[in-house]
Length: 217
Image (cartoon, rainbow, N blue to C red; front, side):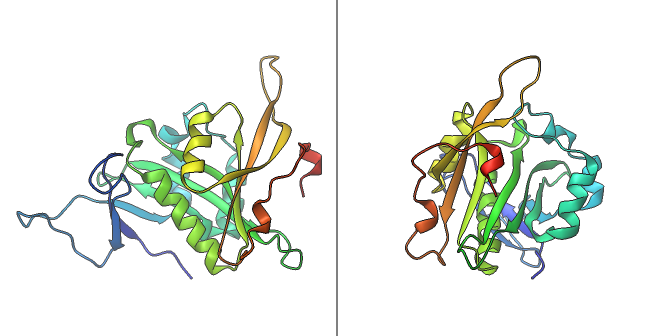
């Protein structure tokens, strides 16, 4: 099922709609009380051309930046999991990139968030939450048992945001993130959120001990 372009009205966190705003299909019209058309954010599939326009997002030091072939691989294999938010003026506001993976037989088929980032000037609008919601909906349609992601242990802002979205720490992965400048490698949290197929929520029962990157399937 292809992702249609959605038009979203986003409001600052703590606003009247709790920061998440609302969305409608591109065929819907939206007008304010004066009858003028509302300026809205577009949520649409990421395209190859966007690779030349998303530097403002990837300049965030906490955003993992990959080589062009890596992004193209995701576009080729999991295009429905690669979504970008575009401002009314055409600037890219943020994106989410993910995939579906795991074994159905072992109840490990799931959606994975590879990257989620919002440009600093477009934060606190509920955009990250909306992008996560869309990826979760795609994973539900694909019959996933859960959605998971990795986040730096030190990135408490992101950890707390994911917890507010219903994610919990499943396990700690020792030295998952490679460091530079002689600094030690950093641990990661593997955070998960159970989907409706996992009726007993077995996928999110936390492991009692940390693991190493080579132990991850």
